[in-house]
Image (cartoon, rainbow, N blue to C red):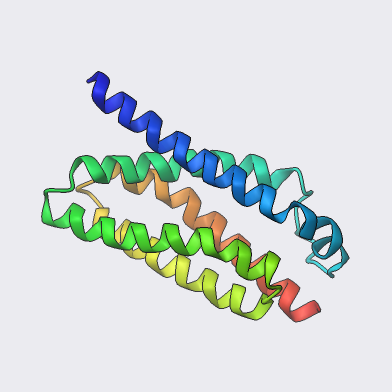
Length: 156
C-alpha cells in the first residue's frame, strides 16, 4: 500500500514539475507576445491558467497512475497508449503555441489532444472509472482551450 502511494506521489510530483517547467518556459512569451494578441471576450484572467493546470495535472497524473496499476490488462495497456500520446501532445502544445507562435498548428494540435483524450476515456469507460472521472474535466478544459486557441487564430 505504501509503495502504491509513493508511486502516486511520484506521478503527481512529475506532472507538477513538468507543468512548472512549461510555465517557466512560457513566461517571457506571455509578457512579450501573448498579451499583445486579440483574444476572446471569454478569455479568463491570466491567473486562472496556472491554477486550473495545476489541478488538471494532478487529475491527469492520478488517471495515468491508475492505468499503470492495471497495465497488465489488455484494455488498460491500450488506454495507456492513447493516454501517453495525449500527454506528450499536451506538453508539446506549449512550445508550438508560445515559443514558435504557430497559432493555427496549435489549434489543430489541441484537436488531436482532445481526440486522444476522448479515446482514452472511451477505452477506460466502466472498467477504469477513476481514470474516466479524472480525464473528463480535462476534456472539457481542452475543448475550452481549443476555442480560445481558435479565437486567437481568427482574430490575429
